[in-house]
Image (tube, rainbow, N blue to C red):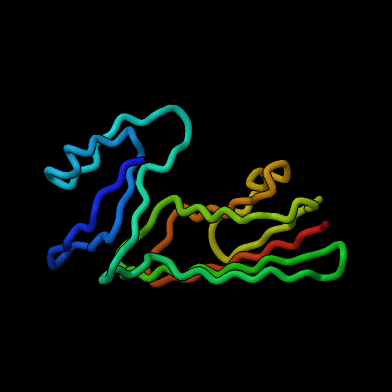
Length: 148
């Protein structure tokens, strides 16, 4: 990828200390007017990586805990809280949760969002927790009981 030096921020902007773009990004357009213009390649890819200097609040606070319960069981606990104002809503929030390689069965529950069986991918050692609409200043909790 290609990188750009530090970018200074105005009053309502976030200062990026370092940013790196996928080769599909047209850097001339970005350097001219800070627009990210690109033709996406096939498949999944990372468009941009960056570091923030200051003046930026993360949209979510996430806490997680993995607890081994003997040799054949474990539990995963996750809480996620939105830090943005209550008049805003985030859509299609996905939490990807890694699973131990020896996971045989998963039972999930959550106070918000969807925890369908199709979101468990044992072959890829992961599961997903999908929150379709996440209002500001809300908190949701997720729990998974694992059979190993």
